[in-house]
Length: 70
Image (cartoon, rainbow, N blue to C red; front, side):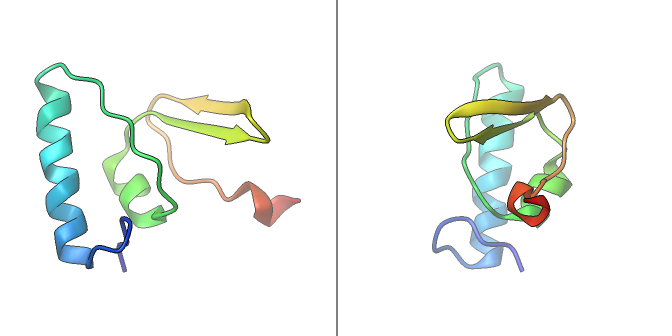
């Protein structure tokens, strides 16, 4: 189930599609989310910040739950 904020899954994907169109036209878009399925499917740059420090920066990344490994 996709969640982006408090949006239902269908609306979340519609918003991500709009943001993707904006990005393809040359505008940088930053999205902060815990929606693993959205991150994994979009396959965009994923920057992970841990305790205020960039801990990873992957060009075509997937969601990584760092708490799972701590």
